Image (cartoon, rainbow over all chains, first blue to last red; front, side, top):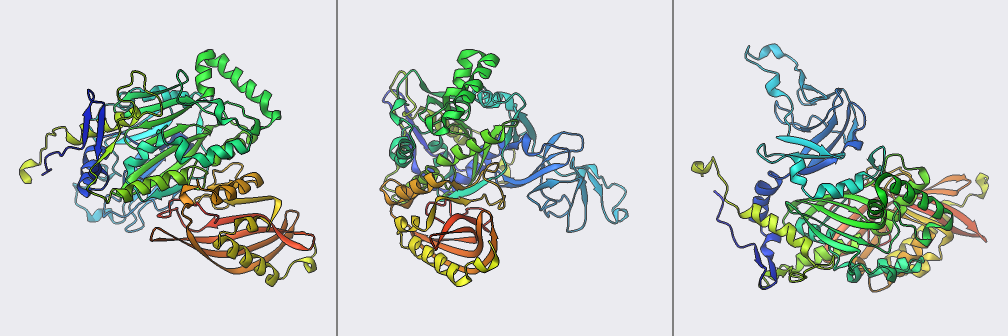
Length: 430
Length: 163
């Protein structure tokens, strides 16, 4: 039986005080509770439809700690299958990615088709007459759905629909998905890394406008060195910035940044020869969406956090980043670049180049983020210091992106899921 | 370039071992002197080790400007992931001079780079692919690509020093 809820957060709106108990970053029991109350209840990002473009295409990966297969069946339908043979448990798919008509378990050669149906069993006549192939199809999460190409799974059959779950985050996914008339695609090359830190520290970090200048001073110096006027944009000044609570624990910061954007904010390092091209891109968006929305798509950067563990940052390039706790003090991170499927070779090369100036485990910024998260995790060993402070901007009428409204949106939802009473059918067994 | 103009393995080894020593000793300005003006430095992603940085998301794909900026950052105060600096120790073996093409002299070598920091030891294992050029009699590095055998940067987390 679950122990009664502890006080994880202090949320005193009147006093303008918001604190998070640091045990949520260090306590194995808290992680166990997160597994059941968050990762098995929420919609979790699995992958992007462009990763399995053709019938039979598959990607095998770990999602929320589980080995799964993202596969497009021979009927064209994208499914998520749990990668474990229904016979005795072995992985039925042992390749990272590919195209197949079937998944054959190497242990006893049970064979499943690309829709997960059991199609072959050696010596099937040894089973009795009651034997049902249907009951032994590859299992799937309770719910699988997608929004604008982003595929999610949910292990809770009673959970609300993905559409409702995403709430205000849909608008921000639209601002990304609308960047191509033919659809977006995940670029080849996955950045697979880790941090010796609690996963929630990366949630906080991914849309933290406050840390930008101190943590990433080296990046801004680099921008200056290549001819970008970093003072041209004050990210903390209204009206060109805002943090938004998007509901259900999702949040975003939207702002005008100094760095160039492949779609479509031209800066001198992109080269004079590209200026007209960028203007043409902008005009195309104005034709499609009108001036205001085109301005938002092209001119603003947006760091979006979708509860619990998906980050889509449309900044100097677009990154999809998801992460999962292996232990309270260790997470695995996977990141990809997202781009218009029809982007030309030269634009694509520029985009990837721009991505690497800041993002990823070898960029000029992400390694310093990882360093800071790991540093916090070490600092938490001082158990006498019980609370972290997330109060910034709490009393302000119009918070800025260097405030901590976005983290509070996450923490309030997290706390609700972690503490709300649950009806437990198995209680008497405990 | 004909085969008789190729450097000997010993000459190439001297260059690679010198490079390793300069990097391990954080003498990065001197390391830059081993590179041609237009040198590039790349680390492909672990899942597409033979990819092309123009259409594949790499971990590092530095052009000449970014290599020099990287060095400047690493020697400054604000590259927090390397302040304080990691200790590194590079073991370079299996050096082979493969031949030459228009891009330069093709050299390959195996590496095990150990990084020690905050009482963790992380080992990067892989292969270097070099393109070398002769500039005024001296061998210089025109392209260096560190191709990881590690399936992921776990638990390394990052490549914050020059691999």
